[in-house]
Amino acid sequence: MDDMLLKLDNLPESRAKLPMYHKIKITVNVAISLNGYISGPGGKRVVISDRVDLERVNDLRAKSDAILVGANTIVNDNPELKIHDSTNRKHARIVLDRKLKIPESSNVLDGTCRTMIFTSNAKRKLKGADLVIMNDDSLGIGNIMAKIEETGIGSLLVEGGSIVINEFISEGIIDDFFIYIGNVILPEDGIKLFRPNMEIRNIIVERKNFGEGILLRIDPLKLVSNA
Image 1 (spheres, one colour):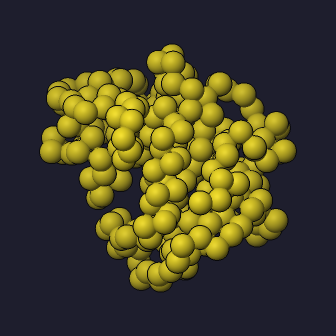
Image 2 (cartoon, rainbow, N blue to C red):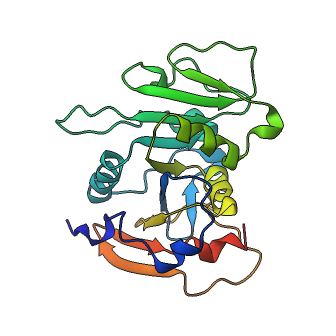
């Protein structure tokens, strides 16, 4: 596997212009269809990545102290968010769940890794996770990242979904952004990753054929004004 697109320390030059709200290195990774969708109708899970890309994602997870997703990703996909290798390295799983709606049967609550859930719901109890309860109007990405930094986490992999990724884009704190374009076209009533209100050009930093699809590394700064 070519390491060029996996090196998180070789960041775009424009990264130096981003506001330094925190010291955590943030990487976004997402798979989309040829027509720009990350999921099917209603957020239904669709397999987009092939085996080669899943191995790449596992490598990205292994380089990260924590993996972050939104509540909709847990509800629709029920991912384990684990690293599959022989090292048994422990990492944190972070879920942004304002209403604390994820099911008790969610795989991220299996107790094998630390799971943190950011929520404003102080009434519901949930086993298998550390609940970080904040005021509803304080649950912005900037405040959440400040709390995460207090835990000692130094690198974060953001995997979705669309709402969460676009919140990170709006905050302007993404270090690296990978998009895998899978060899599939999804129905138009699915969920798109980007919905820009203006034309955006010259966003791709690197590109290569990868497995059955295409792997892109983009400059997140180009997206900030559109978020």
